[in-house]
Each structure stands twice: as structure tokens, then as C-alpha cells.
Length: 251
Ligand SMILES: [Zn+2]
Image 1 (cartoon, protein in one colour):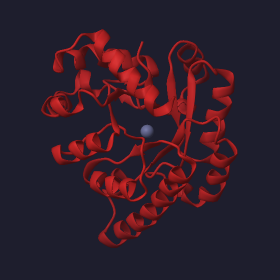
Image 2 (image 1 turned 90 degrees about the vertical axis):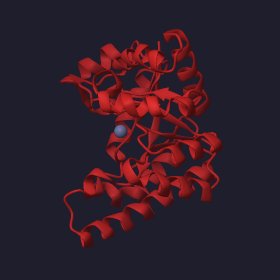
Image 3 (image 1 turned 45 degrees about the vertical axis):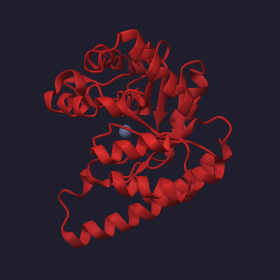
């Protein structure tokens, strides 16, 4: 079974948590302080399957002021967490903003991101990243500046130059279950095939929906056979590589 390296398990229903977390290994990513508290509780409840990353989601500006609180949460739980995340740069949030609002938000978010990356470097923790669209190069620059060794670019959709830099730096990407039902994303992954074959992991980004179905850790299993076809590997090989990378990243 494959490990889900990026899921908002605190946003799942109790029924979903019970059925999924008993069975599937998952890295939970937090969006803000309270979300992180729930994840820490779930890790206690399901110690065999749940690992936790703590952070503030870059598309949730209402929680940016919680940095001090989340930094304390990370430091206090340093030895039991798997990494810092979800952190990164806003992209979707900027779509409906005017130029002035956008540059203000970008500046605020970039400062927050840098604080988290500095903390990750100091505490030697991996980062679980939201760097999508055209924010990938900026994300790469910040990680390089702080000498970050372990990083996951979740739902990677950057370009060929980006993927080569990620590979060279020894970082990883995760492939989304969108691979099953989204032809455009499948074509994108095909064009990246040569560069991702050693560095991919699998994620659900749950509870994000795929073809009307809630993304749960178990949905990650559906990605494996499709990726196997694209990379000319067996499903078993895909799971083995994805899990080795997931364990290398998050333990
Ligand atoms: Zn996410």
C-alpha cells in the first residue's frame, strides 16, 4: 500500500478518519494552529499510521498572524513531528486581487514562508510545500538560500527547468490522484516522466475532490497503476519507489 504524503486529515469526518487512518499510512499537513492541534491528537490516536507536518497554509491569510503560536507548536513538538508544512506561497488566492492587493499579499506571504524555511533549517526538518503555478522558482530560491536538504513540492506542476533543479537538489515531488481523471495533468506528467521517475511520491491532498469523490488517503492507491503505465513500471515498483521516497523524507 502506498503512503499518502500530503493530506488534510483534520478536515475529514470522524467516520473517514476512523476507517482510513486505521489502514493507510499518511502524512497530515496543517493549515493553521488549531488544525495542527487536531493533527497532533490524531497522531496520538493512530501512532502506527499518522505522521504530522505543522505550518500555516499560504492560501489562508487569515491565519498568518498565528506564526508565533505555530512556531512554538513546532518547537515544542520537534521530536514527534515529521516536518514543517503546509507552507509555501499563495497562487490561487491572488487570482481575484488587483495589482496592489496582490503585491501586498505576495510580500506578506513571502516573509512568512521565509520564517518557516529558516525554522526548518535550524531544526533540521523537511518541508511539505505549496509552491504551485509560477511560484516554484521563488520557492526553489528560498530553499537553496537556507540549505534545505529535504523538501516535497506537493502536486508539482512546474516546468522542466524546475524539475531538474528539484532533482539535483535531492528534493521530491508528489503526484496527485488527478492523474486518473484529468487528461491534461496526465499529459503533463508524461512530459516530466524521465525526470520524476526517481523522485516521485503519491498524495491525496484530501479532502480535495476528484471526479466528485472525496480525496481520502485510500484514493492514492488508484494513482499507482496509472503512473505505472506512464513510467513503464509495475504497480509494485511504483509503490516501492513512492514509499522509499516518502520514508526518506518524513521517516
Ligand atoms: Zn494541501
